[in-house]
Length: 321
Image 1 (cartoon, rainbow, N blue to C red):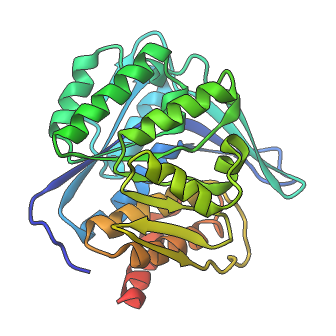
Image 2 (image 1 turned 90 degrees about the horizontal axis):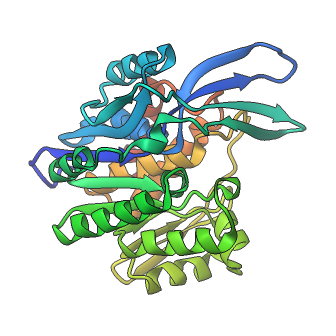
């Protein structure tokens, strides 16, 4: 895999990072960490960022509480750019608990007073971020936690960024309990897709919300909205990827010894985008990303040690050549 562009790239993800409490089965004690869908993808992007010359940054808002301070330290230690993170004197970090119950991962959230909900209170801050970005990444959760006015403003801002030649990437990542109703979700998912160059939906979500009968229906629907590159993830089933009039179906072997599926899709996104931006074909990028995701689900928590996943990424890259 070679670097096709000597320019230093800037990737900026937009969203919310929360305090993560992970409860293991049969253990009343919790491990404390930090996670959130777009942040997880940013974190994995950084793990693979030495494949090309770029700056990986996160855009959000945090509080003045101790957990917010610890989060900023964690982000800096991970070598992720924090210059686009603002602080709020009245709000704090959101929190969620992840538990295994009867073999399923269950999430409980406390995020109503999250500072990230006010990340666009000073819009010039985001305008500055857009001006510096080459790639902009956001998700359905990013949209869900915002007010209607800020959702509309964000989508309009990303549309303008795309017109300026910047790449916009979107993961619908539908969380039904964050929205008022299905019609509202459909509207904003479609509006976000219309301003995106790359979209990374999960078929189970799309089937539930839009009634898609198969991944091909999901693919065609997003193509009809003008998305050039579509990757339809489908749990342990085949992944459908399409770009430049070429569509491929890539089989997925179920991972052995699955411990925690949290972060699987986010790690897939980070690995896929890293590979694509480094010059991989869509097929090779999917093969690399599915290998990384298979490693992640064999570990507890959304974030796996960067050294471990980097080696998996490197080996998968070698195998794809």
